[in-house]
Length: 108
Length: 117
Image 1 (tube, rainbow over the protein chains, first blue to last red):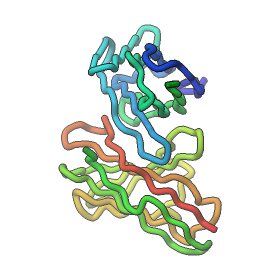
Image 2 (cartoon, rainbow over the protein chains, first blue to last red; image 1 turned 90 degrees about the vertical axis):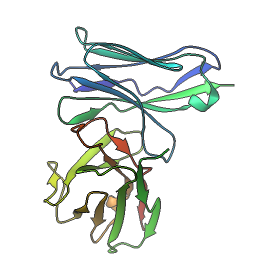
Image 3 (spheres, one colour; image 1 turned 45 degrees about the horizontal axis):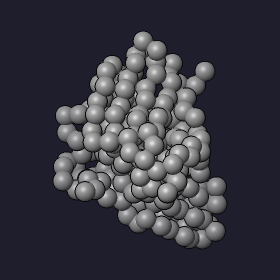
């Protein structure tokens, strides 16, 4: 079993819809959880950073961590075409492990 | 705005050439920087951890003589791909963490796309 599993997509949703992205993991030692957005030919941009379980909201983005299920989610409300990108989950206790990324397309 | 700058963004060169990539932290001193490699539709692969003033720590399977890392100052780390060959063509990305934050979260540069002909 891989340490971090993330569906590569692509995921296509209409503009304005709520987007749900998620990752599962196997290492219960992970304490830090991150979501990055990566546009084509660019480096990843940190979107959300959470420690341990719980929810965190920042504008249209909400990150959820469920350590009991080893499952993390990123929700994007009122999705915009500019949200079209690859979203990478990442988690860490010491060394960061990245998911493969989910390609998201927001259809105008 | 960007907190990590990477240069150049694109390199195309002949096989056998050595290529240097620079990574700078713009508004903080980064005692630790990281170098990654990313293949199309694949995740980021950590190549090495660069510590200011000491030797880099390489991940298993990464040739230290092939990928030379120098972290001579608190704001600059360089990766040199020596005698590059077509199989070294890839997207190389650096990252840095702010002081006191350990190894996360990492802030990334915009990457360098290396193409070896």
